[in-house]
Length: 253
Ligand code: SAH
Image (cartoon, rainbow, N blue to C red; front, top):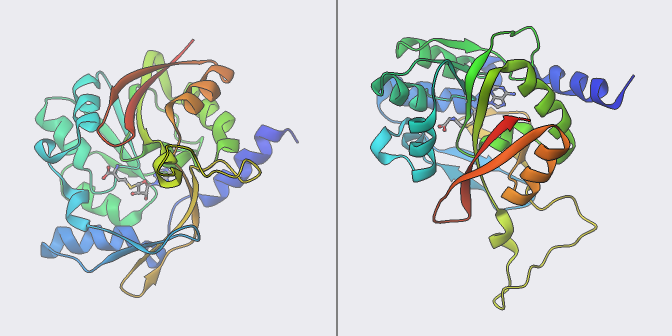
């Protein structure tokens, strides 16, 4: 079996989540129904535990960071909102008079999106039985996270070629995590023998629900552009945010 088809199998195994192991979806559901939620905790072997403010997952257009607002402005035609969460970007698109299909592996998030009147489907981005075509593929809030690791880049770009309509493009944001490793003199404390510094392992917890661990990729613009080029895509830097974050546009060569 080829390298790419083996990787595909590994990714496909993830499929979608079960509602008993969907911590983020449970937090989104609680917030939608009750107007508040408990603490959504993110564990990682590399960092101290962190918290995701659940209300941030319901942010409105005016509260979104610049790179997200620009992505929503530039999105056109038939739009796919990937890893859509509470559906905040699809709601904003609707307000801008645009139409999107929102996909997520989280059953509870998809339930909330449907209740919010969105065209939402419980679909894993890597599931090839989802065969529709889109003019814009939106991947926001560190959209590169879903790629998981740099090794998955070839599978990701193959999949993008299947989902993009002719002339279509991907709008994706990420951050360069180099600031976590910067010394006072500006030099970087990175061990080159380690994995790429933006590859993290996460595990979410909400109330008594502990999710499965998953890989989550942050990637600097130059590295993204190199992988895109190798896989037949052109990368354009659309906007830089104020904290090492950026929005990129990827189009098929
Ligand atoms: N885009 C939203 C949510 C970001 S959190 C926002 O900006 O607020 C990332 C989301 O991606 C989660 O809801 C998670 O369930 C979803 N996700 C992770 N892997 C996925 C995959 N392979 N396919 C589809 N959705 C995925």
